[in-house]
Image 1 (tube, rainbow, N blue to C red):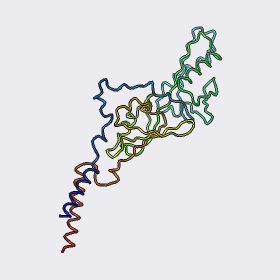
Image 2: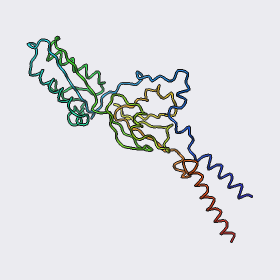
Image 3: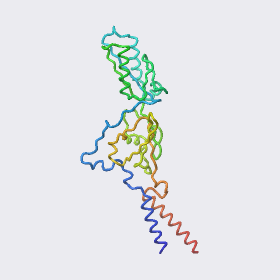
Image 4: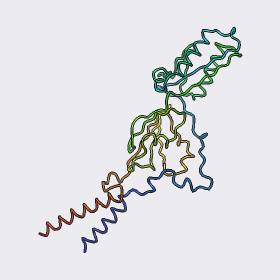
Length: 269
């Protein structure tokens, strides 16, 4: 009877702690149960500030309303460069884009060295337009500058379907988009403690996100930043080795019971 009671307690405890609850696997729980839903506040996300080793794509289009007032060689240089960049694939910008050097500068045709470290893309665009207008063109010249990152880079590691470095060609990326692009979190991954290691000018910072909580969409950390390192930690059930589903757990219990029963019979005989 004591052995039977022990087996019953063992089965109950194993079943209780080894299976992964459904609530640990669902993203943004109770999102649809909110009266007005949950609004995504894109304005709360801080704009990205350029760092060393970033690669920028700079396209410039210059339209001269009075051709006599503009050096046609400079005008052709900018317009030709812009058309050349537009014909390239996004991946090739790695070789033709403007890399931010160790001093935070990029080298732009005609303009020369331009410090961009710590500036947003919009601030860099404004600075280039102003410098061109003040030094090379006139007020009647229309200048259109576009500054973008040559790909949105991030890395995912841990309990993820497809770990490694990824590149998305869009301006903003949410943590859910990054995970989906990496094959989704494995069933043994901890969705409640997704860690983000982020490089800042003063060093590295670590954030933790609970992706099962619907209110995470209101957090400024919901949007990742270029060069973020995302870590998916494993659940405790993975290290226990008793199974991650009810069927696997039952199979483990049956195997353990069979082993114990066989051992007892051998001992008695």
